[in-house]
Length: 175
Image (spheres, rainbow, N blue to C red):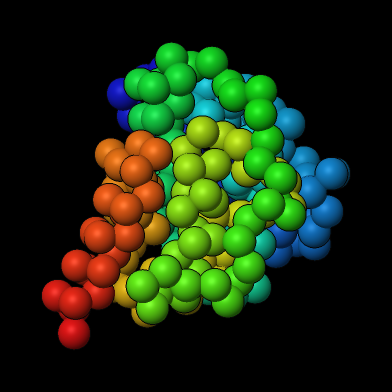
């Protein structure tokens, strides 16, 4: 892996966006097979490229910078914590807390914590996206960047209360 891997990631983003704009809308046939080895080497997969390209084309977010920052966090977790060994687990999307649940008045927080952990570990199923529209609403509402939240979750490990306290503090200091 080169020190400037982000250049390859930018190229993959550009290609995925162009392919989606050209009508490639089915992830099962999304033609980026030559990029998979690179994506896997940094802990990513086809759905990481597809989902972000789809949301960018259809919704205008998340942007390239956010895509890079989020996947830098995933790469670091993959290399540093997982020692470049992919997890054999996949989160069950049905196990995610309901979208309307809250912790200490913060809606979506019970849902985003396990999604962030699964993103860091490379355990999100293809039907779930970290930084989807609902996640983005949570981030905007609470003045948190999605990559910043991944750093907080990584640092907190399994300590949900540390994450909750951090979010509450951020919310209070942003008002």
